[in-house]
Structures are given as C-alpha cells and as structure tokens.
Length: 55
Image (cartoon, helix red, strand yellow):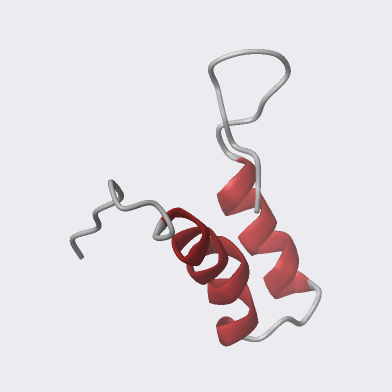
C-alpha cells in the first residue's frame, strides 16, 4: 500500500500519481498498476465492516 498521508511527518500527497507515472515508464501493465493503487488498498480496507465504497 502506498503512503500518501499528508497529516503528519514527511509525506507527499502526490505520491500515488507519481508512482503510477513511474510504473508506466517502467513498463508495468494497466492491470498491475490498478492492483497496486486500487485493488490492494480496497481489499485491505474492505475487511472492516465500517468501510463503504461507492463508485
């Protein structure tokens, strides 16, 4: 999971889009990028019964 928190300590709120750009330049597929920046965090957070997501 990528840390893009901007609430305390060193953080970079643009980390996710920068990572996507770097992954594209490195030749990762769209599916691999989506797994890292969406599906992995989604699957982690959906373990909580309080988590909701509307697309």
